[in-house]
Amino acid sequence: MTKSTRSATILMLSLGVLLLAGTSRAQTRPPIVDELAKTYGLDSFGQLDAIRYTFNLELPDLKVNLSRTWTWEPKTGQVTYESKDKDGKPVRVSYVRSQISSAPANVKDEVEPAFVNDNYWFIFPFHAYWDTSAIVTVKDMQKLPLGKGSAKLVSVKYPPEVGGYTPGDTWDLYLGSDGRVKEFTYHRGGPKKPSLLSTTWAGYKKAGPLLVSTDHRGIADGKAARIFFSNVAFKLAGSDKWTDAQ
Image (tube, rainbow, N blue to C red; front, side):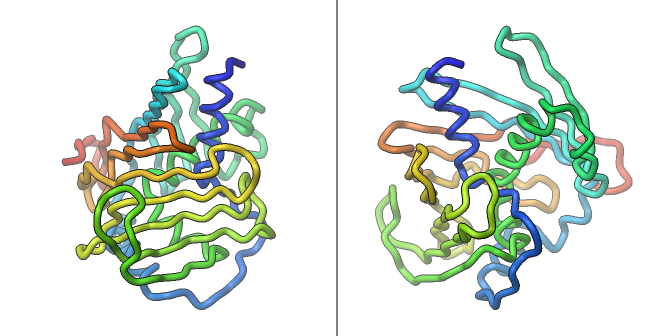
């Protein structure tokens, strides 16, 4: 594995990819968690039968540029992964998440973790709502990490005892007056890199009932980074037609 590939792998696995272990610890959480999820379309999530998107990562200083496409059927748990191997040959894998324990090793150890990572980036406000073990705090009018001005800060922290890939991580979401995330900072809970990542949340599109930020530009440990989504499309319940996000 090359240095750039290893760095990209560390980045992808550390950007808040949390498979929460065991039973979630109940807690009273601020209303903003529900409000944020609803802003991004949680109440209408059941209208979707399938969603497709391409996760793209660019790290110019490390000469990293990768893409992988996912087709996800939330109701059945079926996932299809499409990308290229190290030799540039097409790779396509389909599996059902509830049957991951019986899947081939590469699916369990590589594909599924990548899916979780990319899905957190794609719909993190939903995960903040679903992951009831996360501790959520709210502060008014905090300075934006990248741009000028200030915004409401919603911090989502995953306790170390919960487990997962990177226990102790914190996602800081800076909300605009419209209730949407404007900027974001990720704080890693362990010693691996990157320890600090700040990006914008821009390029908003509607994928059916879902509101999705498709463009995240910023810095990871002082180096330029961009994560963005392309080819976003969806199928509504009862339809066989793919519709592009607008």
